[in-house]
Length: 71
Image (tube, rainbow, N blue to C red):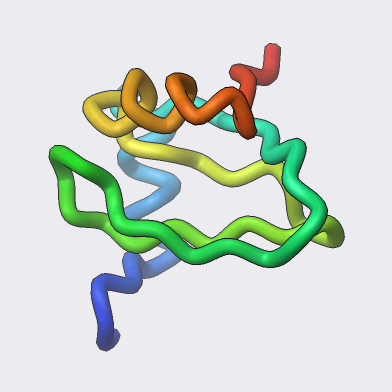
């Protein structure tokens, strides 16, 4: 792994533990950003608007109004 990427197994484990929140991206362009708390790199696009996000990073991302929680 490189550049802050997380393996599929690690993401699956985090999801199982409730450590992530799925966020939906409303933006029109592709975006890559680093979580303010975790330092994790997230990539969102119009073709992949829903991504799991470390719950510690959610608040800051929601403040941009480009994201919302999914159910």
